[in-house]
Length: 225
Image (cartoon, rainbow, N blue to C red):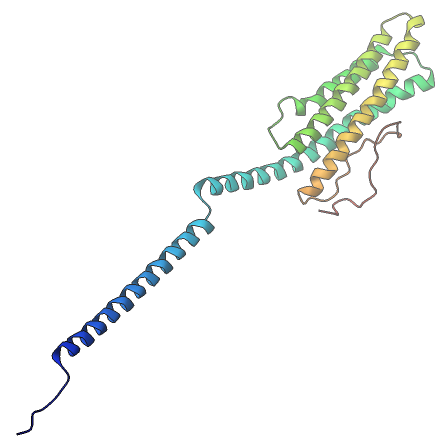
């Protein structure tokens, strides 16, 4: 009887071992790839997602922008009202000197009362951005300078005629300076109004131009926002 030959058992065992090893390697490689993908996605999410600090800062900045936009609207309205109060007084102070009239104490008291009312909106200003605070501070400074002009006029009304001319000249120069300061503040107010999306808002004094005073840019009201 012929003897059957076949593959030795030790060779079959080695082949099976290689297959099992290959299977394990493939499984491990697949697991590593899966873990790597998951970690990459997690890291990307963590990097792309704003942290709590950044989110808080963004929220504060958004709230500040909304608050400032509202403050600008309110400041424009305040400036218009104050302008209508002080513009006639500043014009009258200058007219007194050019007309050569003697200062009148009663007129001075009326103007001083007007100045006190004009200063009231700036007595307790809200906190705003630097640009808005600059505009508000400039308007307040202009009112204060206008008040000095009126007080000097009132002082002239209480001194002998020989000393009135010098005081009236000083009062006129203070009034001109007040108009100049107001023009700078009005220019700043116009710019922050544009930046806030409200367009051009020209709240300049309706007085004759003075040396150093700025003037409106000629753009139509409300445009450019």
